[in-house]
Length: 192
Ligand code: URA
Image 1 (cartoon, rainbow, N blue to C red):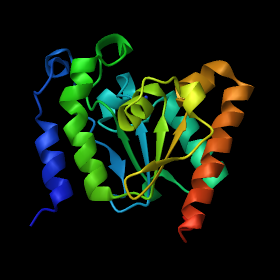
Image 2 (image 1 turned 120 degrees about the vertical axis):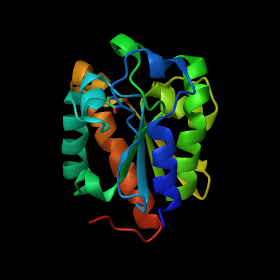
Image 3 (image 1 turned 135 degrees about the vertical axis):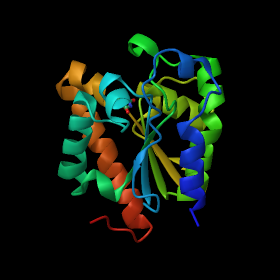
């Protein structure tokens, strides 16, 4: 018997709920990692490399995410779960549009329902604004932990922004990951 999570993944892989399905996606990027992880990351949407490999955060942003996971949390990506707001690549790496985000939202909500992470870290504005139901900018949202479902949501910057912005955004991302580690520790969870 496939798990509910596997069933959801299979459903997503052939999704045609929005126009991204017909705008040159190679494959649906559902997510990767441990579907029982206490820590989940939510990014924006697949880029070219993610679309090619069918995996989230495998390009330059992903390299930085892997490095920060290792340095601040002491784990590799298989110990967490990584997903995106939209599961298909927007053409030319444009921002996902409101109708695309709305069409894809049930997949993300179901992923969160099934994983039940204690801590969700959002990467960039789209995930933070969607899950916190706000229009506040991410630079104002970050630096705090918000109550979210059974745990907390910790907004941080998108790694692509840190790659462009250098020292300050990178230091802010590190601080947010330390916050995530503390939130897990407060719940008796030590990632390893
Ligand atoms: N940027 C994202 O937001 N998600 C990815 O999967 C890759 C890059």
